[in-house]
Image (cartoon, rainbow, N blue to C red; front, side, top):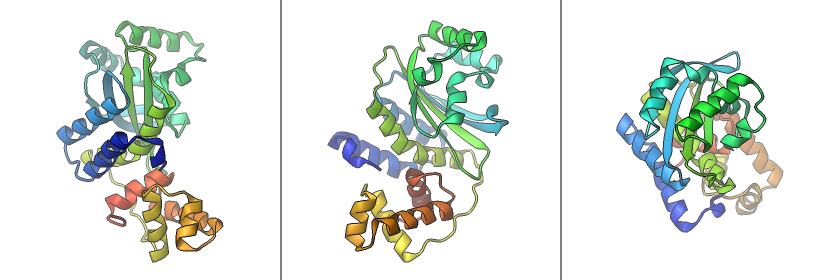
Length: 247
């Protein structure tokens, strides 16, 4: 989880968001958490949404939660179905990690992509950091995007999103009543390992705590991810907390 990367204040807010995500049941709850995340990543605007993926692209939108993106931009985005050509979303489908908007746009060459970003820029949307999630057993993908008036986003902000997005994605699925594949139960040892992963311990540290080899820890982590249908450690923790498998 990399908790050592965060300041005490950031860590307190991150843990509050993670635990609050478990009780997130409506639009108001989610928007409150998104506002907290927006502040953590020093953004001016925030938005998230979830939709269906078909043939490697977002084919339809199930729900959008807009904090404060310009209303005129949102009207234009919806009326022209710009989500089908949005390079920020297209980049998310290709990568698992959080990323800067410029990661998705610096190599754009098509007139359609360049026109899209120029249009967004007309609304003051030039810089940002984004993340998202798509589970192994789901065709539904989420996108979380935060923008600012200047290029002030840093790698630290991506780490914050990498930590939080799996938890908020599950809350988003819950609000939208999206069914997930049921998780398989974990063994006592797997729960022990996962509990220490949740505390931010590395595989080596867990091996020392439990007096097992680091290779065995990695084996348990892989089994945990497989049983929970998780794509990484952060997702496994989020799912385990959702199912009450760890406290």
